[in-house]
Length: 125
Image (cartoon, rainbow, N blue to C red):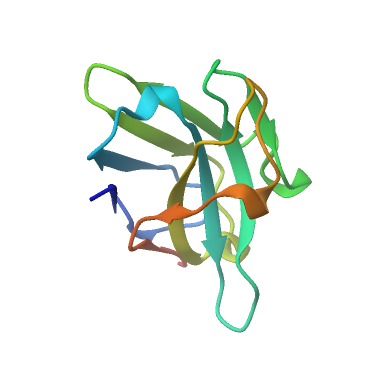
């Protein structure tokens, strides 16, 4: 019943920008922590950013600091990932996920249980 649908992926040149969207249905997204994850070929899925239910953001990895920004639009029940200065190593399938963990701080990546299907981001010239 809880559904998350990612969109906005595609092919972009190095140094370019892309904004991913994560639309939620079946629950009110603003009551949950939302995380963005990615999985590159041959690698484990990694958490990159989280936005807590109180709208505090947390970077799970240093590689996206200063380049990626997470935000939400409560009226649209949608979360966004703004990606700037993209690099080839950012190429991956990007997923959004929700966590109902108690508290107002972002939980560890392992706390996320509801996942979208992912959207492919390819950074290449």
